[in-house]
Image: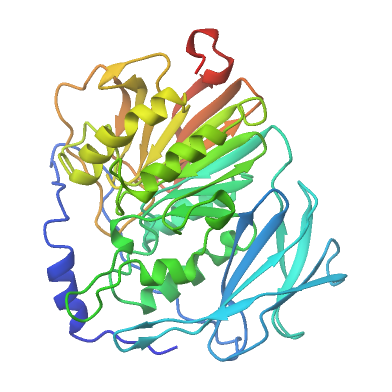
Length: 432
């Protein structure tokens, strides 16, 4: 794959991301600083047709999409089975690529395997017979299920710490509310990110939505947004009736998850709004008693960073009523590089039938932490802290779930915040 880091990158950053860095550092607030950025190079053991950047995602109830990249053309074939070294099944898929200014991607392979048994370990290899063996575990068919939640990951030493802690959490699926690689037009950084997350993303489904750092538009040079994101992280949008990879939904183990796009049209006349209306109408709380939504730009935020942005204010004005009427349980967001948990809320006030909003944009980005908060702390803000970390949303049964936030303090995953949630579908006072 061609590596291009020419002067257009500096120009692009100046044009595209000017004004994006709203946070300020408070000297009296002693929190971990940003750490050095990483670039993960290809392993010397790989050849031009070896699978790289392997990651998996859920497709329907019993299928998994396996995605990987090779430098040169190779078969888009996956062999798999439930025993190591024994592959009784195979599936073929598609190959694509993309061009970004002077960068040409490698061969991007997508293969859907299944039907698969729930809560089962499978072993697989991608492409040729000589490729290494990978293993994955399918999500359970019913409760309990544990989601790891991490936003604004980037590629720094803090990212590595976050990924290490997530890997030790025995999670079933990762939810990522935007800002993956922080490539910011430097396409080889997408390749680096794929290699960085492969040890985890090849083993458990990673379900993602986009953030502002995925837009990557360059005036005159590249006018199409989300080119790399859409090519590399194909999500199951068609299965949910969506016409865009930027918003979709899926169901897993009694949970209906909706991924929304903060950086595509969301007003009541938009395709996304109309799709959301239709999707919410299809939700059957007897089958999926939990309803979870992910966005990138938070609708509730008492951090001084990213205040007043249209993607937050206008999207909230357009869509909050839909989520409230549907009795959404939790809304996860990123964007703000800190952690904050709100009470159940609707229209800026505590409401026992509104969703709990949680900002989890502290995965490890290169820009550091957003350390200044609005004072005094709003009554609806239950807990806030500017530290790097990740969250875990463990749905125990149809009525109860536990949320924990794990701070990466001193490279140890410390549980700094936790709360129990009761599903709104089980609350007689909140019947939709």
